[in-house]
View 1 (cartoon, rainbow, N blue to C red):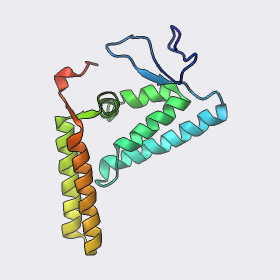
View 2 (view 1 turned 45 degrees about the vertical axis):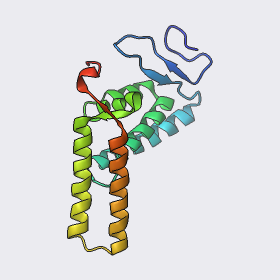
View 3 (view 1 turned 135 degrees about the vertical axis):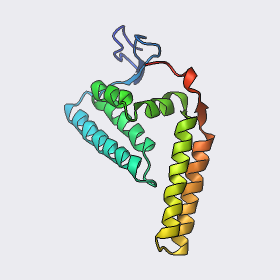
View 4 (view 1 turned 60 degrees about the vertical axis):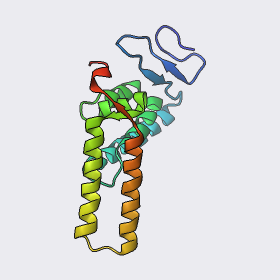
Length: 160
C-alpha cells in the first residue's frame, strides 16, 4: 500500500498519486546505500548499451532501457524519471512498459532498419552460410516480435 506521498509502506510496486494524466509506477528504492549505488551503476551501463543499440542494427535497445529502468527504480526515483521522460527514448520506453506496444512509425522504422542492417551485412560482408542463417533467424524473430506488439495510435497517448 502507498501513503499519500506515493511512498511504499508494505508492497514492492506502488502507484504515485495522480499528478498528471497518468499515474507513474514507482518501485521502492533499496534501503542499502551500497545496493542503490550498485543499481545506479548497472542501470547506467544498461543505458549505455541501449544507446549503442540505437546506432547498431542487431544490438537491442528497448530491453536494455527496460533493464535500466528497473535498476534506476531500485536506486533513484530521479534517475528513473529522467530515463522515462528523456526526449530521445523516453516515449518508446513508456509505450513499451505501459501499453505493451509501439507506434506504427516506431515499428516501421525498427523493422526497416533491422532488415537494411541485416540485409546489407548478408550481401556485403563475406560470412559463412551458417552465420547468414543465424542473422536471418534473428531478423525474423525480432520482426515477428515487433509485429505482434500492440500498435499504439498517437491520438490515444497522453499529451506531455
